[in-house]
Length: 470
Image 1 (cartoon, rainbow, N blue to C red):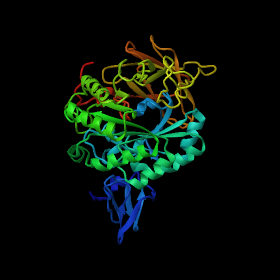
Image 2: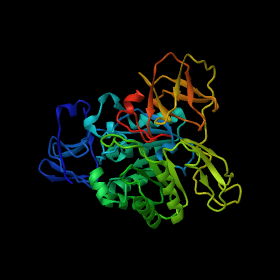
Image 3: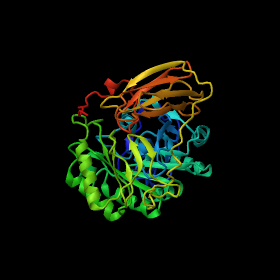
Image 4: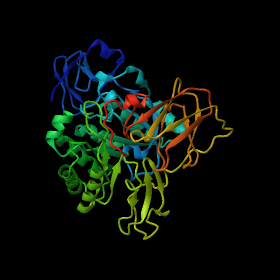
């Protein structure tokens, strides 16, 4: 698929400078062929390729999104469909603009589809900025996520190499529409891959994502062969792939090509972008998918975007003892000993660094609440982004409490603009938020764990969505 899009005036107001891209070759005079993804776009001078952020200038391919990101957000590793690496770890999530696909159900269409982008959500970072924010806040993992990091390849690689030198791990959450050579670069600097396999249907990919299935499968196998940490997820979409046949094909492929030990996540979908006149994914089809996976022999199958006590726990594969207890994005290691074995029967677990993640921020010295508010959980929003407005260089501490949880503390500032807070238990109906500075905070309902919200108002966020009752 070779497509070029003329650079328009409205496109250029946030693309003020570019850097020469990787992975391209000259094609004709003043025209290049991009080799980053399987599309192999051939933009001429003054044109962008399919993703609208990579284009040709004077016969060279440039990327115009280097360092341009949505707000750097502190989240938890479970946000990225990663359950077998440092459960409960704090991560710094960053997302770019543009995408190699054009899914009509995109959960982050406001940033992945450039024609809909509000330039005010775009911030600029250097690789050094990102690494310093991690060091200053004690965060040990950078996550490349949201729209899709393939389109941001140069910045991802440069920052990940720098992070590696500082002992900071990196996580790559992607639909993985990418070529072999760029993946070789990623394998050298990325520690954790969480790959979203949309479907096992070629027709699904062509019709709903404007991409192809085959290259995605080959690149997944490439990562698996490298030995890097890998987990697979599939968004189960109402009336698209939410049936036994489609789910069964995914299970079969994972089992036959990756083996029974790779964690598999079935993730609930929220209606979005061009596909809104349907309900959220039925929880029952997710539970049915997990039963099918276990019957096939998949050892660990998890259900995402379900705030249910039985959706995402990890159990010993030999004796069934609970190893990690999860609710939503909360994780507690409850059954693993210091040797990373089941404390009941001694069987080694497949979880890497089980005790590196559960480290909570302690109450700051002389903490006094200056401003406060309350947020009520509901059937659509069980998580919340809290954003520090204005300069993110100042440091603001936030206390979160409820009738069912212990006080939790978060820090905003020092380069971190947002944090995620999630419902802590089935009984928790609301949270109390108090912070120690006379500054304004913004609150964005999060409709699923991979969602980067750009609207504060819940009613606006849910416009056109048919809700499925809890």
